[in-house]
Length: 312
Image 1 (cartoon, one colour):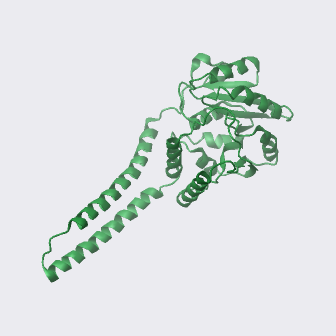
Image 2 (image 1 turned 135 degrees about the vertical axis):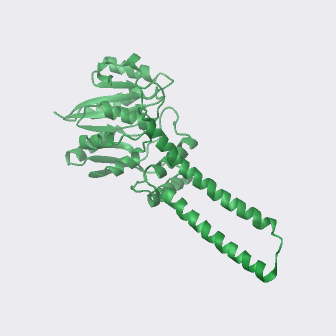
């Protein structure tokens, strides 16, 4: 009998762990599959780990990993995928915004032969501004990246063992899972569902973290920003040469005229701004190269609360 693994990263989700487990079991028990539920405690500072330990001590189907600190959701998911044994895995958030009622439909898609069964949420319940910003972001990202990202598609998805192995083979430190899911290809089925509002706790995504995540999406899967800097540099050089030629012609025709302050400051600000933007883009790539060369692990496991199954 095949094994389905549920991978659940958790960061300060003490209030949701027990109800998450109960709801998952209700959906998994009727399925003709064995199952395991892998919780990843991503360095929580509340009682999340204690709640997970209670379940793990009581139920053999509950597995867990506790990381030494908050490495971020990307690393937590990677840690879970590395340690599960399932023929397929379902990635879910622990905040109950990913409805477990879709698990049965996901498994149906897996039985139909799809390697990725993706749950795509609507934008209902969000403000018009937030929806507009999201739509604009995805339109911008898809115009510059080498992968295709769909608005509403996130980490809530089923992955076949073939898809899991493909994802694990990509060992880069700066991980952007939405791009990775698209990059590996493989057959995909999409399931639509209505957006679910968080019942307990607060969102861990601040405005700053969302901006950083958006930048990761733009930079992780394309070299176009560097090419834009290259072309912009040539354009500025061409315009500068035209301006120099025009200025030289005026001097030859009318004599020397004292340069104006506005022209000088405009040129300085324009060129300085372009240089700073270009250096920033180049710096992002150099920083990522620096992180990759260090070859640090994606996560570290806190061995003080780990059973034999979770040992690396």
